[in-house]
Structures are given as C-alpha cells and as structure tokens.
Image 1: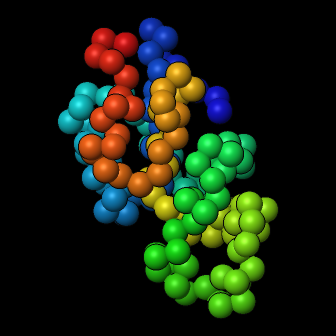
Image 2: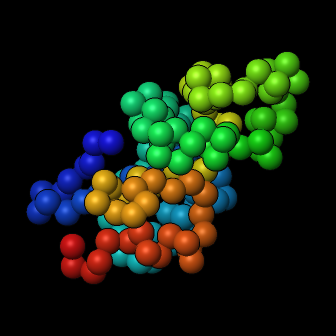
Image 3: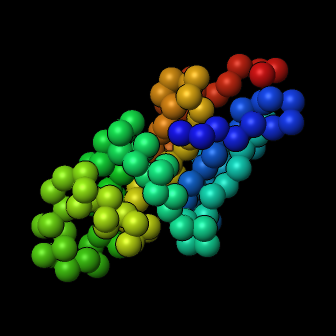
Length: 134
C-alpha cells in the first residue's frame, strides 16, 4: 500500500468511506480528538482505488470488507448476493457498489500493526495510533 507522507516525513492515516456514514463520522471525530493527522477518501466522489482494494482484501480478507448487514447489501438481488463467493466476486461487487464496503476502512501505514482496520471501535484502534511525536 502506498503511504502518504507529510513534509516532515510524518505518516498520514487515510480513512476511506462515505461522509454521511455515522461510523465514518465517529472514526474521523475520534482521530481528530487524538490529534492524529488523517486524510479522508470519499468513495462516492473519488471511487474505490483498485490497488488499495486489492491490498485490503489481502490484509483483512474479502469477507470482512463486504458489509452483509447494510442497506446496500439488503437491496441487492438475491442472485447477486449468492454470487459473492470468493475474493474475485467480492472485489467486482465492491468496485461496482462501493457502499457495500464495511466502513470505515482505515490505512494506518505499513509499519503499524495492523496496517489496515475495518469498522470503528476506539478500544481496538488505539494501539494502531502512531506514538506521540511521530
């Protein structure tokens, strides 16, 4: 995954999602409260970057990325839902219907463990924050 660096070589956290999603709003607000530099990538306006999607699938697995509880999934034709059986079929659906991706997807950078998280839980995400002053 390419990392975005600030001028002083500080790693930038990237939050992917849609701006009106409550979970994305919570994650962005939490990162701001933590004074964590971050950038927002809007799936609706900027699309889903294919190379990033491939990296996320490799990192967390396609099944964790597909939000089977969301409105977008529930509105899909049952034959489309049944056709999502592997990484390739999930990838095609996520590119065609970005709202089916569980949000937010947060890239913490290659040196963080884990480098990518899906969803928001402050208790889980706190260890992913870069140490203060980095």
